[in-house]
Image (cartoon, rainbow, N blue to C red; front, side, top):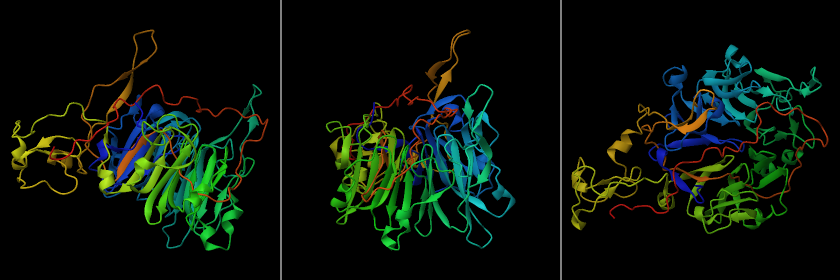
Length: 527
């Protein structure tokens, strides 16, 4: 079932997560931990997570990948990631980028093919110089990477690869041409191309929606599309103001919309289906610090009179994407404070197509959240001695596995219940950088001769006991926003005929559901 309010992600409870990456058009996610390792889960069709023949990787057993597993040198870390509809990019600290997943348009940076698996190194022009990739973003059938120079000069460049149907590659053309059947088709570019129109600009962030991208430079200026398909980056005049507070601080992109947080904490939105009440965020006195655009919802988090405030809204949020709880409306047409997040200090929000993830600073409110998935039938006695000693020795509960331990049975024994969260030695050992568990996968099972393939769950496997106390999730999609005068953004030209993108489909991922159920209560230590 859907998660209608926030839960801690149990599998990452002992992992310290520093960044979470997904997109409005993705049903999979990548979390990067303090060791620079990547944890991947979600929809895995077309080898989107680097595993062929896999429909999904369950959130209770993410796939853990180290850079050294892909051929990197010892000590190299993952520093960034991006997810497209059915492909993934991993960026490492040595300036390389690896891709896996659907590649019919060359969006993985390799010669077009049905899919790339396992993760494969992209060979761009930066490998011939001392430059290196530092960021990535991904749309439906295209990808962008941002490179930085290692030559002692400040020079950033953006490369694009994949389909240029909507001008996504920023090379000044779509490559539209007519084939023998009379259909209009578009060029694909698997060799990374330099994006035009950004010379002498110090780029600090890139973001991609389904078919468009945003670029933010160090001066707070933004480049994007217009009310027609734009083939090279175009400056947004709103953020070229002489007023420092109105320069952009961050950008984010949704399926058909774009958003900017300015340096004064205001949130600006443009694109399809704009709401009429964006000013309500400023009426709340909110200073936005992080935001995101999901598949069907919008999110903004920040401070209001010195206290954390998180707001969200979306008219098509029917799967609990707003996280308001079972007894509250599932959708909202106005920016709405999310009461279930009121006690949380959120510093990063990452909405996907049907799920939203958060990173939050540790506090009592975060510790009080239930964990997902729920532990099925936990042992009612001490896992060391196998007995119950009564009220005089009430057992201590592990925050991750929910196993019970008498204080005197621990090594070394404890004289009193410790303050804060506590994890058993077994769960802590699973947080080790050297612990490499098998992922919990959902595979496509072959059918009988002459019959189509059937979907079936693979044999249960031991999975990672990893998790971050800084991370929690709410199933659905989500995105943030703040107020301001909306800028106009591009929509397709009416009546224009376009060939359907090769790996676009209307599948919403409902052919498989999360197998775990939402927890409604949390067992407390000493109970």
